[in-house]
Image 1: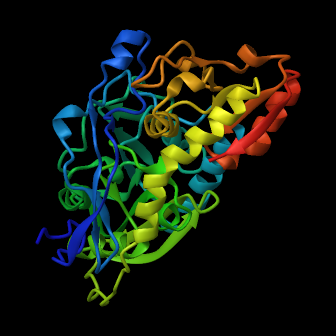
Image 2: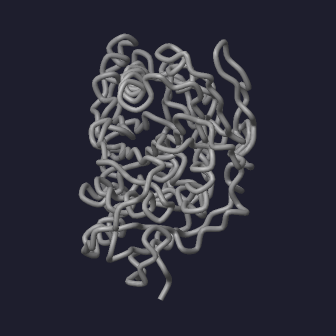
Length: 373
């Protein structure tokens, strides 16, 4: 049996396999032929019956590229900006009110470092191979993966990074080398328990080799010789956070995680169900658009199998305009592309933005029926 990367249990088994999906979700491609030529691979998801961890056992890291053309930010959304600002205030107040050095692994373009700069006087340093912006007024970024540290940081953060890492235990141990004794590591990842409970097929991404439940994330921290604190669920249940201190870890509790067979069934049914729904809307003369380019749009169209049903994708991030949803010829546009239109069926990739999207539609005089995945 294959050992679980989080808890080392050998009570693991195959859960599901997806159709071949694009290996990238957030790389900007502006040539249709290049988009169609994007490599595809199935996701072969395994499940640990002890801690509930899920991972793609056939993941090929050599296919994945994180460089300056990687565009994973949601910072153009006012809803997301407000959330990120609150998160920064909360984390500094609870875990590092007197910090002298804070490190962020997988910092992107420094959006969260900018947030932290407003609420702490600590030295701020980020690492990310996809970084284009290498410095701000109060922070600096190195465009590499996180190297070994010198045990001097008061706080190390990784947000939406651990799910991308082929060896999460080794990565967590590297992060721990930056921490001074008794200091804190904060990890934030997509909340896999919500994905399973709500049958969220479009949260399955090839770039995400790992899917963490609270029990799995806690088990990983303990194996890395850290002491995990209580899990924190935020962003309407979408994000799982956990702080862990560089102290003697507790004994890991014995747990059991039922095999989520209903999730496997839902993933198998997702494509045919949405294909039938969109075919019906298309036959009524409705123009079908997606709102939100990037990872979920890539997954949605890959499972749909007939991207020609979709007229285009809307995204408020101007950097995405003119790029293609990977694996397809479906182009991304700014909201002005549907200004003043009616009889639109709008498929919203993340329901947390539904009210924000409704306001945007009102501002551009567009009438649309909204469907959230």
